[in-house]
Length: 584
Image (cartoon, rainbow, N blue to C red; front, side):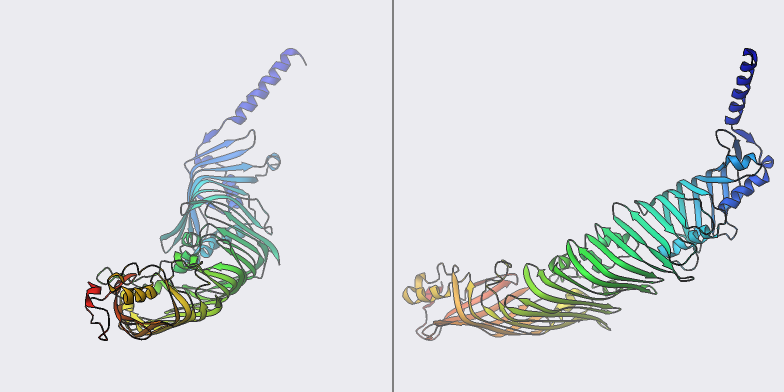
């Protein structure tokens, strides 16, 4: 080949390359119908409008449609995109056939019509899955910077933003494989899924990861119209209430749990999830057992049995925004009982050791039962400081608001053993019992407290009362009446027995026979306390065992910080009691 011929050949090749690289703008009417048909065949979407079409041959054949609108034949899916790019396969093109290996939707806005009623994420995914399953010749579909709207009855139910997804090319019997990122309700999330469209016991997987939570499911799907998925599921979240709120659920009891981790063997059916060999971690406390989650209409039902080595029940309780009565004359606190009983719960939890506000319990069994209009929580059994403890709270809807019942029983509790765990507990030691039964009703927490009625009994033996030196007071009163009342609020007073019984009516506590006695003294107390107004007023008599004289005392003040002082208005008896000058 001569030099001149070589130059001509190279010039021709360069010209062809430049022509191939050039995007050619042509009128819509001149676009080959089979090009549009090829796109529709590989995507299942009918192109209804476009502004401009461009075709490039090199380096790879491609078609670009600008400002394109599209729809699915049945109307369940429609949208528009800034640009639709179709990448053709080179080899079939050489033989006169048009085949697209990849379809790009750039900045699309896609409307998805929900199939059936709007029931949350499961119904939102039904239409896209049905669309992808119906494709017979699916190319690789790439969505870049898209937005997807889920609509029902003409209203937008949810929106996915910043959608960057890749749906892999597949044959009709092959599984649907999706990967990418989306922003749902303000939380960027990386997702991946493999969903089978044919075959028995076909592999299925799902993963989602965000700063809020992570989810992974690996298993198999079987069944036809109502498939069943069996596999291993793991969930981890920094806050269970935040995760459920992300899905639009806000159960009040979920606020008790922050960090939540779950690993279990799952069986997933329509409206029902069963978890066996489940391992839960609640803020680091591990529980093992089985759980079941079902849906009946608008109510979710959770049931299960769990067991573990340790659980901080006090921490769970403190996180709940429970209604607490305000002092009389202040604002009212609605009970919002419907919100607390919005879901059905039947949970039984047993642990070797538990903590409640510092108190240590062992061999603990608890129960939580929630039905519509009924809330019940119970400490079925527990061992505590040499004794046993039980408690039960029951609240049910009633015509006048909410009926509340509280029962508690503590038997043979050694308070001295619990002193290190409960430093704020009243300065008492000894071994004894406490029985409490209360009932109340109302529409607010204040109403319930003001209506409380019931009984309470306490009995202790062989203990001490800290902060009061009653024996020193008696000795000084006998030797030097003028100095008797000095420095008597320091020290301890041992006792052989301490007992009191109270009746409660309309929020008023009446104690008629409170007694504390030792070998050389006896103290009696009687009076009333208002639970709603939070005050206490009681009068007492401190006397030596021989009854030679009596020192009248008064317990008065705020219920959480009363003061014990000599009662200067009381008369002293008998005649050889302390002189009145002692009390001035």
